[in-house]
Image (cartoon, rainbow, N blue to C red; front, side, top):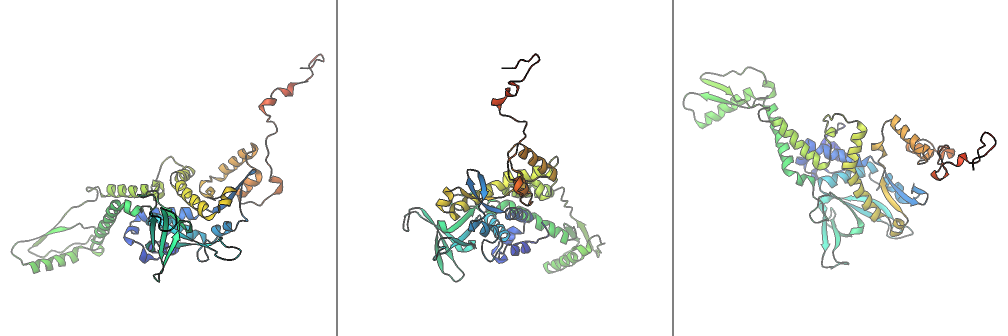
Length: 404
């Protein structure tokens, strides 16, 4: 968790805490899962590539390359932007990002910045009657803080949603899908908190022989509760005046299978996010870190990153740029790279077999470019299958004859 509280993490993302359902975020498993996904997406560099006959290369000269890599808008860094987007996508089911483009001048139509819209102020309208433009067009109605409405077309908004959708347009929030599980887990946490606040005392029966009115009962109940409950009274001797007698009620957590039920609820919540048990601080045997990272990428991150890459490539690039082979892609080397020894062995195999240039391997290790290494090399002992046996042609034999 890196020591962040719920409020600190929200402020780090630039989100107003008052607009977030604190009850849901108060469930530790839910909060942990949202935080893991938000940080995992944010730490992956987003890059623009272009396909060529010689292979794929980074489009570093394109203006969108630095815009998305460094600051999608003047107010937030790339890390803050993408962690906020991923948080909203999971917590609300949808994240809406306004594409701010230049309207006049030589740069008309170019993207100036990307701005996240408040989910509470965005409403989706499907023009199924064709009142405005094309039939079944999707419009996003945004209301600002002053009450002014803006009608944004589908190509003016980046819409990232969860995989679960009832209409194919809006995503379902995971908190709504897991409402029962989250509420059960929250109830369990409140039970534990109250149990500890009462000094690990579940309750008891106060006996008295004789008649006593309702007012006196409540007064005596309050007095005994003050004497017996609370962490400061845990383990202390309870004085009981005559003719009262007090008997505790045994309520062991083990007997009620409380821990098993809590773990089951936590695993249900984590499974909905695609979070593995080892990421919730549970020990998993016979698995190394590289394998765990690879499973997390394939099973959890890959669908999410594909969603982002497709939406960005379609709405931020022009038709001409897409036809020229340009596309956005997250660099996942940071989560898939193995140990130093494993990386070196992998590079050596790729370089010796002419698959990767030495300069490309150096680039992945953030080493400076060397012009002499920018060539494909291969072991000179290898020959094509069609040439097998030719090395024996015209070889002199004993007695002066040659092999023909």
